Amino acid sequence: MESPPPKFALPVDSEHKATEFRLFSVAAPHMRAFHLSWVSFFACFVSSFAAAPLVPVIRDNLNLTSTDIGNAGIASVSGAVFARVAMGSACDLFGPRLASASLILLTAPAVFCSSIASSPTSFLLVRFFTGFSLATFVSTQFWMSSMFSAPVVGTANGVAGGWGNLGGGATQLIMPLVFGVIRDIVLIFGQDMPDGNYHGLKKSGEKAKDKFSWVFYYGFTNYRGWILALTYGYCFGVELAVDNIIAEYFYDRFNLNLSTAGIIAASFGLANLFSRPGGGILSDIVAKRFGMRGRLWTLWVVQTLGGVFCIILGQVGSLSGSIIVMVAFSVFVQAACGLTFGVVPFVSRRSLGVVSGMTGGGGNVGAVVTQLIFFRGSKYSKQTGITLMGIMIICCTLPLFLIYFPQWGGMFCGPSKKANATEEEYYLSEWKSNEKEKGFHLASLKFSENSVSERGGKVDSVTRPADETSPAHV
Image (cartoon, rainbow, N blue to C red):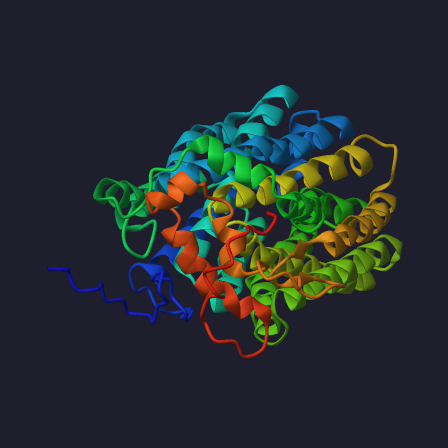
């Protein structure tokens, strides 16, 4: 006798992913996972950038040169490059709940040591190791993509990522104690998937024990993930770079006191309260009418406008004008982050964690490269560096034109006319025939059924004919 289907507080699809997003609900498992994910990411963001607003004081106390400050800023985001890729694989293999809580536990000592740094070297090291915690962004996006269905996944990813990024505007040195509490909360109350945790699902046979080699392979060989990693490097990566330099920029250029410069700089990060969630919501809205092609076009337009405002910020000479342009810049560049993760969940079903990690890691690589080129040492003034950074944003957003899904199309081309260009063939091509015989592909099959909405307009949620067996290129 089959057990009755599980009951959920939110309406769900065939994968038991929520088809509605109720912000003020804490119902398990969907909305509880949402709140646990953004709170844990928020805590990590605060800990990673707690030092940035205090650089004008820290540089005097530790006798830091401009090169020391630049190196520490680079270290704070470079540590997460590898960590984000590794976190993606960890989510695929062990689940987002355990992966997130474990990283918080491992980085907590570095957060504590931030308060006792006494030299340029120790300051650089604590910022480097604390920055590893930013990889919880990957588990946040993976978790939301595992809990919410296609019509609302952009919203869920956008709000969770945006509210987590609020930590960039709320940096305080209180995290050693908070980290331990959040770690325990995530482990005790969190749930990896709508139907349970990874360990239990694998033990019961409901989730296949996937092989790391194949998960890694299908993620790293999907060119769409690499393009999104590049473009994310120049929305989220730029956000990280600006978090590191914006307070010092206003302090030095407009001769402000530390408190005033900090308040102005905080407004950049605090815009995440609505800007990144707005990007995710916008992605879902345009997808209902224009499908995946709408998501891609909107991402390109918004991120390009972010680059334009960045260029203007470097040219404006008045304090009031700079503040207005900075706020506009922050809204567009952060909205682009939310829009990016409206696309990521559809790149790969089997290797979602790896693709999320690649994209997230690309954000940190972009931050490192930007700070190395424009904000390390005295080669460029801050305003010149900001202008050149805006130009780079525009240029590095152009590769979005190359993303193409056979079943949905790309920015300039519609879907393929080949008979096998279906959602089912695209996602099932990630599984070998012997794996399909064991039923490992069933989750991807359900996902393909639920992603039909990415065709745009009113579409029935059914798969194309099953007799079309030639796999689409992934």
